[in-house]
Amino acid sequence: MSSSDPLPDFLERVGSQAAFETLSELLPDAAVFVVDAERNVVHWSPGAEKLLGFRAEETRGRLCLASIRCRACMLGCGIARHGQVDGVALDLYRKDDRWIPTRKFARAFFDSNGAFAGGIEVLVPTGEARSEEDPEESLPLPDDAEVFHGLVTRDPGMRRAFQTIRNVAATDASVLVRGESGTGKELVARAIHRESHRSGGPFAAVNCAALGPALAESELFGHRRGAFTGAVADRPGLFAQADGGTLFLDEVAELPLSVQGKLLRVLEDGLIRPLGNDRELRVDVRLVAATHKSLRAEVEAGRFREDLMYRLRVVPIFIPALRERRGDVDLLLHCFLREYRRRGTRRVTSVAPDAMRVLLDHPWPGNVRQLRNVVEYAFAVGRGTRLRLEDLPPELLEDPGTGRPRPRPPFSREEEPERIRRALEHSGGRVGEAARRLGMSRATFWRRRKQLGI
Image (cartoon, rainbow, N blue to C red; front, side, top):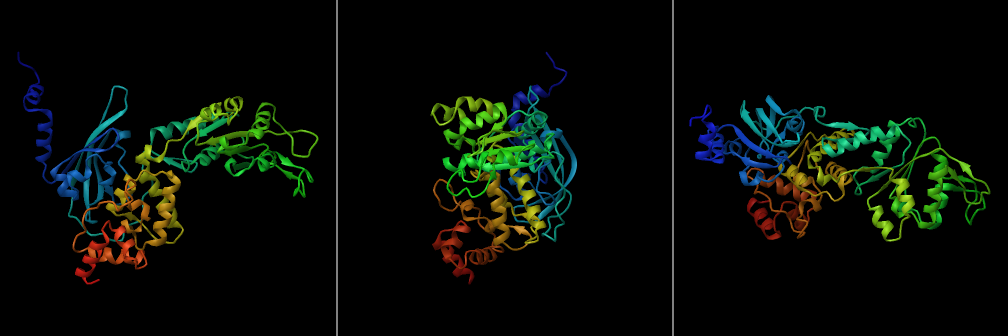
């Protein structure tokens, strides 16, 4: 029985994978690559190897942004959001640090629930590869990025958190922000304050982990002169300072049990009693708390009051770790580079591909805060308009499992002498440190240094 469309029969006979790979090979000068739902590369054509210089084994299973680096903005194209890209002009960095003008064509695929399932992308060269010139200032963030009161993302989970913040800000409900250290929990608290009707009032914040049992009550509720040794004057507590506004209690799980009951009283009736005071004071404060711990586990361990837990987490907001939203690494990097460039210490306008691959592969245990610190380090120790591998702190250049230098592709003959000189400069002449920066053993470093006459 004949079919009106013979293509399915043909694909069944020859195999869809073989047909696709053959098709991509018929475009020897264009890069054809496929990404999965996480934007990891699952196919990298011979034309892609030729155009951008990365071998297929260097790209497969890794985030596409590690190999597809835009010269102007260092950001992705937004295929997951827009569904397709038709002939967008992009200047892309090659592995050898030259850049080549291209046009990009792409189509996204979505599953039955409408979630991004992956895409096929084609890069067609429109000119010759060129050496880096003086790049222009970075372009604005792409339209698939969202900036919200200092928080920047393109991650769906973070976007949902932004919408929750907008919704809850219209109320006075208590909010509990969950997330690892460095994810931006205080920025979330400030966003809630700024979105609320209390935005014209004060915002006060305290890290409860820094408050001992004796200090916590005084810091939160205040004290009268003479209430205890050293209380030489009346002092309003943080609740009084935040009256009419918002109080942020970071690491609330660390509050002493003796203070938790008094905090519950404030949440229930809005009354505080400063130490040494014989009467209660009324305060109007919106409370936002945060923790990296499970309050339920703390309750079960007897370290946190169950009734207080329920009062604090009327509205929970979870902030994912940076390793769970890898697509935000380059976005945040872009923002931090722009921030430090404005400070005038160094004009970095691009990131070398090998440095970018390390940044994208790093698990970021310190989250956004750690990434900011890495950029600050790079600005302090590096030189020139490009952030290079040697500019990154040593811990990013080591395998976290072994503590040894990460394996890296060999340098070209042209760039190796300069790399060795820069590594020695950054390490203050310490050969072991310079070798580690370049991913070499000490013996290999000595041998190459001697061969090159450095």
